[in-house]
Length: 297
Image 1 (tube, rainbow, N blue to C red):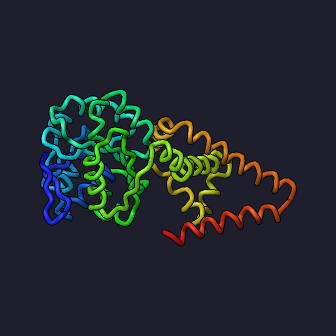
Image 2 (image 1 turned 135 degrees about the vertical axis):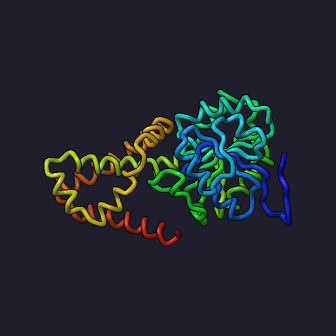
Image 3 (image 1 turned 90 degrees about the vertical axis):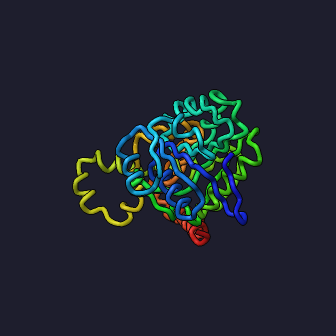
């Protein structure tokens, strides 16, 4: 494997990114800036994104074919939409490059683990699922940012058979991007991010949809200001991607939707009974929790 340690500095000869969008492009930009990679190969079937990434120096080489792109790779980062992951892994499975290390950037990990078990269990030792907690509602390599992961969390969910050397290499990749790396089970990961990422997107979509279907929607949007803008920002994210996430993390999200509905029902009953003291207690508890969290960011 083409891996070197120069004064303990992370360095790999070739990184292959399958799906050079915001996340993949930002990984490439940071590692190239750090001098942590010899060559970055971008794999993609969408000519527009891959061409942009090449022309703007995010990647050094374009491969329209997965096999071609990974034949000399040290690490392969799968950064494609959820519904494309299994097809990509089927192609990676055929590679004679048996020691390439594989990771991903998806926000659901249980489904990724199940696909690995179904498609390529024999390579499990070289696979380390990952999730960078960074991003934007914007997509595409034109928004790539070498500082996107600086000071941000990255969660690794190693498989039972992931080798220590594989885990270490993927961890060092993310640390080279400026990230703080933690490890947890895929089950714990999916429950956490259902509550603090997936549910908020669903609620944001639901709010905008509710406003948009009202008869006075035009007036509502005309007078909406900062609060609505902040709350609804993530409703500008890719609907296709978020439907795929809902499918992949179905049960944890369903549990959290039910819990959220219960909270709304409690507020509804307090409003109906004009129990404003009860309402204040809920708002106080939420404000304290939110401010405590914010102070640690």
